[in-house]
Image 1 (cartoon, one colour):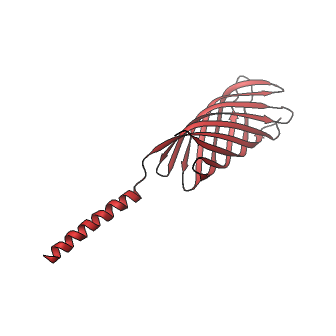
Image 2: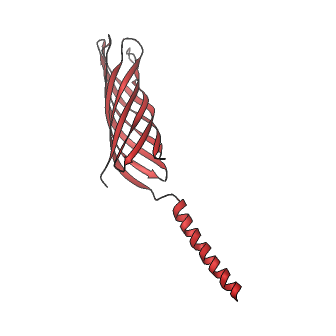
Image 3: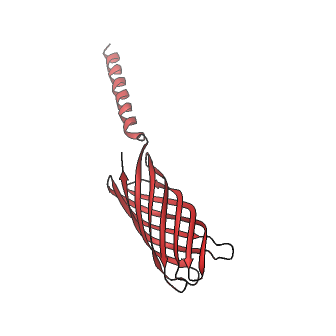
Length: 179
């Protein structure tokens, strides 16, 4: 009889340990939050006629937190000013997303596409705009994160106009808003 009581107590303790283990090990429920971000960087153009410049941009999206994975569909804009004989200025209005893995220090890949326009001393051109890149973010406070990014960005050519592209190396800060 004593052995039956011990077996029952052991089963109850095992079941309790299993419930606690599952609660700790299973991913947290999915959550979402609005994000707004500001990007600033040094632009290194490719091709002739342009020298180094700078860029600034803004993004807004909704970040979905799924265990350690973060998905962020977003829209944004950017403005770039390049020096040199072409004296190019460019802007993009883009939509796309980010994919990150949150380990405290969060590696991210991203891509966006949309409308781009540039003006040079040789003329103007509006066409397909894009960016693709990677970032590394650090979240110290739950509402603010910051990091560094590197991306290839540009505006495609066509109708007798050349493409304009540049490598941007920069930083960004993002804020959780609402909720």
